[in-house]
Image 1 (cartoon, rainbow, N blue to C red):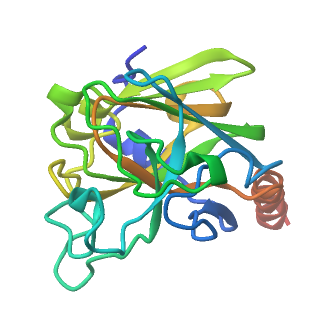
Image 2: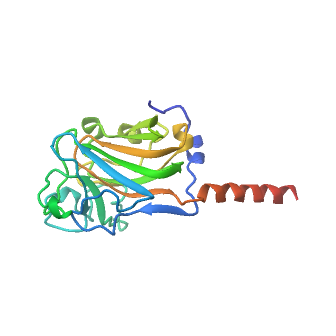
Image 3: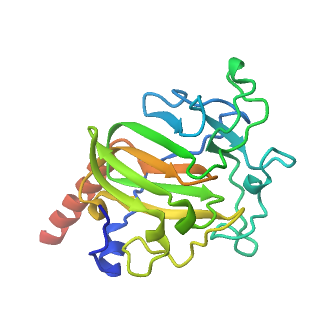
Length: 242
């Protein structure tokens, strides 16, 4: 379902970054490493390539040059909100749907490249607990109208909500962000999507890639962060009453 009903002020109020967040930046991986359960039990990663006989999610080192896909190399980035003036952000390792499986036998692809066909497939992030916030970075989404990328949020296998990437550049959407610019070799950081916006918490997120692209820096609440936040509100309320 598409979610467009809340006003921008309400959406902004709902986006509360936790004081203690858990970030998966994938820097422990090597270029080309095939990804599955390296981050278990907190996170398990799987993928589907709808164009190949194999389904591989792999790490891509965006800081390298001369790779199989220069569109994922940076900084400098050609555009996007991570390519602003001197704040051109280095992202390091990101995750791709692999187009070629050469070298897969030893767990590290020889020359990793992202699937370039449209559509490419999907990457699923399964968490070991319910979460209420999900932030991320995206590289090289080349025009959302053509590529049709989206995010699906699930709880216990039931779809909670879907967010189309068009929503991030649609001024009428609660997910609109004027700083996001899609394009070739563009890098963008997305404000965390919350359970309040989606209508419920979730334990699994699927990124559907309509074409080439990579994802990095998954941000979720740290374990116990929600309870700590609620306890802080309760303490503050008690102090006000006192």
